[in-house]
Image (tube, rainbow, N blue to C red; front, side, top):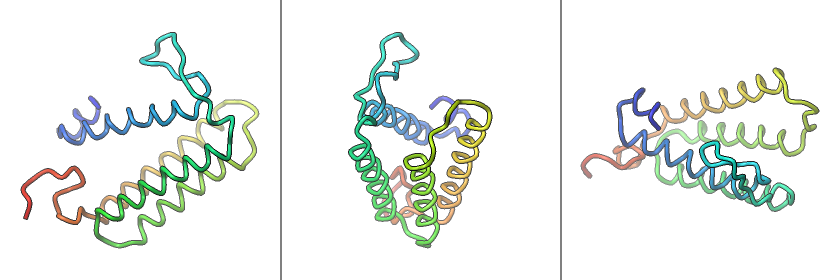
Length: 146
């Protein structure tokens, strides 16, 4: 949140970024085994939904599709860029679910993850430049209504 505030100098953007990170922690709480901490503390949290892959897949697909539909319903612009982003996200998630599990964590795994997240962020940025809020006020809803 602080990094966004320093980079963008927009409080609303920083607050949205902070809310995204916080909400992601709560979703991770559902699926992770008890390996999550609060600010690096000693206590570990997690409900272990990953131990039930069918339920975890349904939850993750539901969240992804709900977010996609919410975004599409509140923005205007070309339809293809968001569909490309959704397809890419589903592709990397499918590889995660159904591909071979890594045997060890090392540079190859880290670089693959970084490249995947970087490409997803680049596509999302491209999508963001191609669509506007239906009221042309931005997704945060700031500014006067017309």
